[in-house]
Every structure is written in structure tokens, then in C-alpha cells.
Image (cartoon, rainbow, N blue to C red):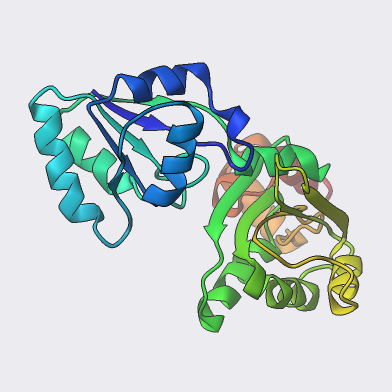
Length: 269
């Protein structure tokens, strides 16, 4: 059996009893950074040496893991923090297991994404997770375009080195009254959550009022501005061909706009 084990995102006490039991019974433990996982294993009094499994050796090590699973070995996968395969190695292995019809399971646990979402005070009704922002400026601009018209809450990862430039980019391209939260050191003694408008957070960073250390989880409020407008000519064209409820459903599917809002627009001739 292959186990994907969620690791604490800061506080080692967050490791679950089930995770400890699975790790103790594992024949092999693979981890992103063996130095980090060794600290957790020692904390849980598990006398086993982890094997390196990271983005640079993922495909090679996956072959070994597949071979071990075929020999009925108990294998566990860990990353430095949070869930394997979420902005961390593991997805390629999952696809190979499915291809080979090999059973695997997930041992749930801490999640920096959900932790930050709840801490942010921003709507939890619906959200999207976009992982780490790209390093290249052109790609970062593409991400900003995605965020610009997104109505759901947005969650991103970013390093301390680039958090300042990211907030500057957000302030220049998004409505700067949109709420944002910067979360760092979550579950640790010095947990910090900075909340406010994009503009106010940008000004705090520019004034060196926010500690920029470690990795950040950024939560951004979705836009309240509708990006799609239906003019009277378009309304008449749709309503000549179909009923308002059917037209609203079709337009909603294409534009991702709320179906009820579209329906109201169509009736407002």
C-alpha cells in the first residue's frame, strides 16, 4: 500500500495519531527533504531513515516506488509541510499508480491553504488555489489577468523575496479596495496574519511595517465587479431564439457569470 501523509505546516504537535501509526508500519518512507522529515520522525519516536523524493529525482524514484509496491511493501510519502502533490512532488507518482492499477490512500492532516483561508476573514464560500506565483514577469502578469476578474476567493503561495513585488503588482492591477490577507508562520508561536485592503497592505510593506520572512500564503478577495455586460442588442438576439431561463443558463456556462444575475439582466429590457 502507498500512503500520502500530510505533514505539519509548522507545529509538530499537529501530526496525527493515524499518521504516526502508518509511518511506524511503513517499510519505506520517502520525503521531499530528509532533514525536515527526520526531525518529525524523531519527534514521533519513529526510528526510520527517510529516502529523498523531490522534484529533481521524482521520475527516477517513482520507478523504484512502483517496484516496491508490486512487491507488497508498505510505502509512505511525505513532503516538508502539508499534503504531498499539492505544490510538492507526488502527482507524477499518483498518475503512475493509477496507470499500474496500484492502490494508494491519503492520510489527511494540516493544510496551509485551508488554514490561511479561515484565518484570512475573507469569504470561504468558494475559492480557487493557484499555487506558487511564477517567477518570470510575463507569467506573473498572466496570473494577474486570471485574478483580475475572478469572483471567488483566491489563494496563492509566495516567497518572502517576491512578496513585496507581488503586492505591488496587485495594487497596480486590481481594485485596491479588495481585501487581502498575508499569512506566515502559521501554527507556530510567531504566527502572523496581516489583513486589510490591497492598498493598505502595499503601504505597510513600503513603510517596512510587515516582517517579510519565510513563505507566505496570500488570500485575496474575489472581485465584486462584473466583467461581462449584456447590452440590449445581445438580449434581444438571445431572447428571439430561446426562453430567458435557457439563455441565462447558456450565457452563464460561457462567461462563468452567476446564472441568476444573467437572468435578471435578460429580463431588464
